[in-house]
Image 1 (cartoon, helix red, strand yellow):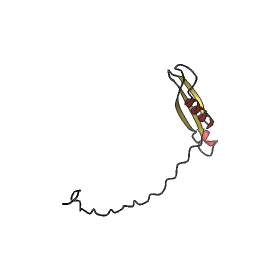
Image 2 (tube, rainbow, N blue to C red; image 1 turned 90 degrees about the vertical axis):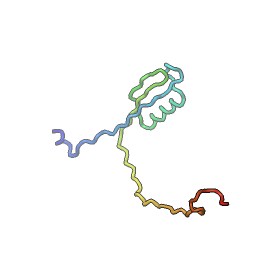
Image 3 (cartoon, rainbow, N blue to C red; image 1 turned 120 degrees about the vertical axis):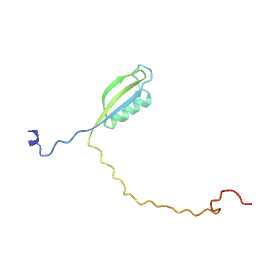
Image 4 (cartoon, rainbow, N blue to C red; image 1 turned 120 degrees about the horizontal axis):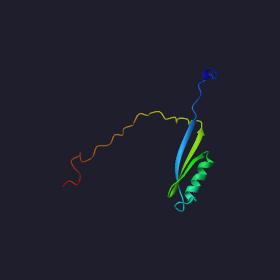
Length: 101
């Protein structure tokens, strides 16, 4: 009966999930290394949300999620006929290299 309410079938939600391994300064600690901290800042600034965080011995496993529109498929260029370049014949008529005596 739900189909009667909507003239168009409901579209699927586009969701990207990313699992990142962010390394910490001290094993068992919380403070991230510079590169890992900047990677986390970059992802959060670009629309990713942190879903889950699991502490491991030398890193933190973080799950990020981003929702929105599905990316447009890239338009591929048309196939062009392959151009075959003719090579000039060798001067020694393929009889082995080197100098003649």
